[in-house]
Length: 243
Image (cartoon, rainbow, N blue to C red):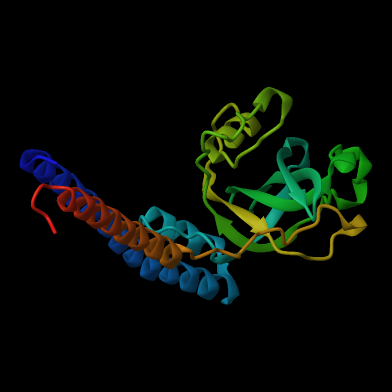
């Protein structure tokens, strides 16, 4: 190999190794970040519930209230239910999202829980359509951002595939005259007449694989260095006069 070619290969290899090590160090930083997120979720989701107005105040101050346990009291508008596609224990169905109006006139979208597809129609579960004032305790959850694999929501057919607070609010209250609380509340499991919807569907298991990712990047950097060394040694050993 010519000296110019060797220098180019060396520069390319060093750049590659630097990038791989940088990615590994970035993943190591994310280990601590993810541990902090998991600890925060654990603390919030097991603490005593806070009032709805406290959670709203946090949101208005620019703080994310997600995973705080929130307690809210009011009446459901069952005629405005929206259905979010989901699966529970391997069975397809829907999360029932219903607006709840407090005595102060605020509207909060409550994820009441899961119903199988056969019970999507409210007439099939009339006992669960509670008319009187109820108290709901659940976890505050933000609106979602879909990825490239998420199907588009179908508001006209009332089929939703990701939690879209603005879209659901608009479809429920097209006049826009109601003030909607800027987060969902996912209801905890509780006694519901007839047993449906089934609350307590929040998934709190969050993986932390960043250490494995870091080790993978470091291993790739080592492999690249070894391949470079073996290749260069082979080239140099073929030169005339080499022993």
